[in-house]
Every structure is written in structure tokens, then in C-alpha cells.
Image (tube, rainbow, N blue to C red; front, side):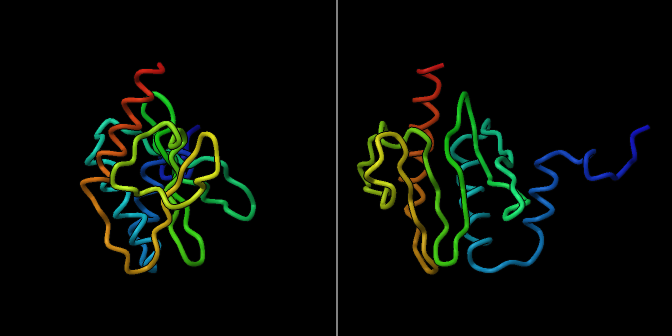
Length: 136
């Protein structure tokens, strides 16, 4: 018998939304803003929480569309958006500022007070989706 209102009955997006409605600090606000930009850039992107572990029971937000687009993580001094195939993407606005030495991934570290180049970030998200679609 399925319990109504049980945590298992909730979808991942419902749990994510509930967590986002709790008051947070600038990192949670930034991650929420990035989430909105990802959704605007690709309304078909699916957000899930993956890689749950005792030190991070809520897991890591992962956005996918025909493969992983990017992940979002909060750290003490930055919010990191890591693009799974970032090294293969053109970055004319030079948004990537982290994990530059890798052969596949690239990341953007956002610090408190950073102003976002929303147009360039959305273009990068759409390019990541197009790359996934061309590989599918």
C-alpha cells in the first residue's frame, strides 16, 4: 500500500522545489537563478538529483536533455555550474573560468555579487543541448 504524502511518492522536482522554497543564503539564491535560466534556455531540460551520499544527502542537481547538460553545486565561496562536454563547446563570451585543464568538462564559478551574462549563459546551455542532440 502506497502512503500518501510519503517522501518516496514525491517526484524529484517536487523535492527540489520544496527545498528551493526554504530560505537560503546567496548560494541557494544563485543556484535558483541559474535553474531558472537553464529552464528558459531549454524548457525540455530535465532536472534530477544524483550522486547522493552521506555528506550530501540531497545529491547534486543535474540537468539533462539527450545527455547531461550541466550540474550545479554549492561550495563555501562559489556556486559551480559544470558542463559535461564543456571542452567541446565554443565560449565566445569566455564564461568558463574553472576546470579549464580538463579534456571534457568545463565549469563556471559564480561568486557572491557576480553579475551574470544571462544571454551568453543561455546560448552556452543551448549549445550544450545541440551537442547532446548531435551525439544522440
